[in-house]
Each structure stands twice: as C-alpha cells, then as structure tokens.
Length: 442
Image 1 (tube, rainbow, N blue to C red):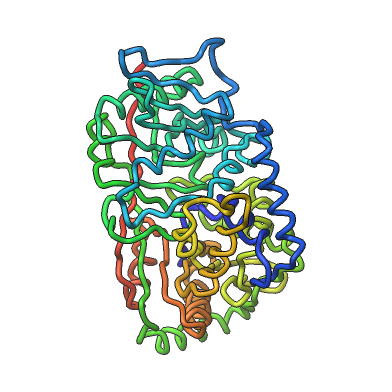
Image 2: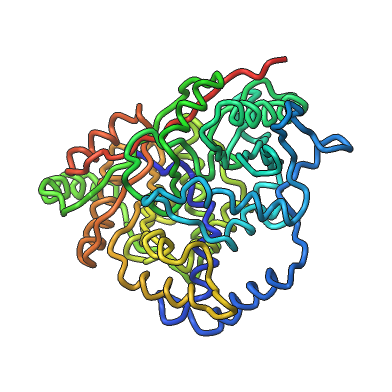
C-alpha cells in the first residue's frame, strides 16, 4: 500500500525562509534570524535577481495583440514583483485565501537557484487591459517527464485571472504557443513547474483554507479552464482527520503482525544526517511512484533542495523512515501547517523596517494545532506488508498526542487501496483537486 502527496514537498522554500528567520522554535538558533533579515535587506536594496523567464524566446516580447487586451512575457524585476502580487487583487474578498510569503515567491521564481532549472525551463506572462493587470500564467517544460512517459506535454501553472473568458483564453493561448515553439503538442495543469511541485485546481471545498503547499482558487476558474477547451485528466483528494480513529487499535495489531514477519524497523528521521536521509527518501519515492500517474523522478538536486528546505520544519516523531537492514523501503512526512500563521501576516515578514510580521508569524506558529501529512511512500514489493499502515498510525499517535488535527493529502482518485484505508481510519474527504489537459493546435 502506498500513497504520496503529489510530490509537492520539494517546493518548500517557504519553510526554510520562515524557520531560518525564527528563534526558539523547533531546531533553530538566533543566528538564523540575522541571516533572514540580511536576506530581507538584500531585496529591499532592489538588487536584481534572475527571474523565471524563458531562455527560448524571440528578440521581441511575445504579445497577444487583440486590443485592448495584451499578454507580455515577464522580463524585469518590476514585472516579476507585479506577477507575484497580482493574487492579492483576486482574493481580496476571499476569507479562506492564505497570502503567500512574498520573499518565498521570489525564491521560487529564481531560475539560478531553483533546482527545476537544472533540467527544465519556464516562462511567466502577464495579461493587461488598458494598462491594468488582469491575469497571469506560467508555462513550463519538463523534459524528464516527457522522456519517462514518452509524451510530448508541457504545463501551465500559477494561473490567476479575473472572471473573463477572453483574458483566460489569451493566457492559455500564450502559454500553449510558448510550448508549441518548444515542440510540445499538449498542455496540462495547473502544475507549477512539474508534478514535483504544487499541482491541481481546487474544484470543491472552497470554504476551507489551503494547508501548506496546496492550492486554492476561486470557483469560477474551473469554468474558465473548461471554456478554453481543457478536459479533466486526473483528480486528487484531500482528507481531514478531526479525532483519533477508533479502528486504529485493531489496524495496529494487524499491521504490527505483518511488519514483524518482515523484520522491519521504523525510526525517526535523523536531522544530523539530513543529506543522507533526503537521498533515502528520494530513493523510496522514485521507486514507489514510478508507475503512478504524473510521476517524474526527483533529481539529486531536487532531493537535496527539498531536504534542506524542509529540515527546520520537520518534527522527527512525525517524519519516519522504514528500513529492512540498511535498505530504506518506506517513509512518511508530517509537518505543522504553517499556513495557519501565514494568514496573519499578509505575505510580509517586515513592516516599516521592523520584523513585525516575523514576530506575529512566530507567535501564531506556536499556537498552531493543525498539520498536514504531505508525503507517504512504500516500495512496491512491501506494499502489502503493513508498512504504510504502521507509518500512518505512528504519525497519528504523535500528532494526536500533541493535540493536533489535520489533513492527509493528496491521494489519486484511482488509488483505491489507499483511499479505502483512509476512509476506514475515519477521515473525511473534504477537497478535490483536478488536473486538466488539452491538445496544442499546430
């Protein structure tokens, strides 16, 4: 039995930037606070940083010329900042939205530092009408995905738009054109960079705030996307645990009996050996998910990046590795939901040059009692050995002992074994995320 969050945990810049700037929390020391503030000074000095801009473009900007609507590729730092801040307009009346940390978004779009750009490429676009921003989109190309699946598909992600079909169509057509010129014949999404990052369009459960590293969007986005010719490709589910499951004791006996037969050891992650542990998790993930829809293997660079970005947030008792001898065969990662605290600071760690947002963030993080199980994987030959069940049960023991409730996500709609297990544990399916796909016209 195996399930893994849709590969999103590599996109954890948020975790590092938040916790590197904290004191007295988890595994941090005061020196990290000075390091974070130095980063903030770097950005406030208005130095240029590399943007997530395509290296594959014409000499002139690409535009959709239907006046007064135009689409322009992001080139400058100012345009990058506009791209990042546009969602504040879309979600100004959405009480469930969690403003992203602006400094994290800048890091995510830094093509010299983000590991995706070691093998892939992406471009950002802004839609304008009468000099006003009305939408945005990212187009991305992951050669590793296409080589593995023998496909010819690119992705769109970071899509935001006013409720206007013309705007959405212009954005999707521009993204498709960028992919067409790279030789791609299909486009799917929403997928930020690749399926190893945030994926999916929320199609139900809009009233619930997004948890760490999951998507949120207005209900009308599905209508815009479908009107522009996209069709459903795959759904993912998110589940909510509100109380300790009654069947846990019975399931634990069954799982423990199976695990003993295999001489399996389940242990907490060793944060002192984070590079080595990260590569073990990468090994299990790449084996466990190789036949699943949407899978693309983590590269070594992505695994190293993920491990260091997540390290400050990891609670060893909620991040476990299963081994037989020296061989890793399974893992689970559960983390506190940072989004609960992020809702309080509106995307900024500083105000008027003072770390007001940072202080509020740390205050609310200490009060957070919700979490997210973001990753679970077991190699195929041991999926019926009770390992996944034991990993989940031990994580839940730790979480409920600390007074936490939370989300398990995301599971594929056709992963029947895992979905049945989660339902048997008393969880409620409370959100659905969808990936769309359409051909790119020649």
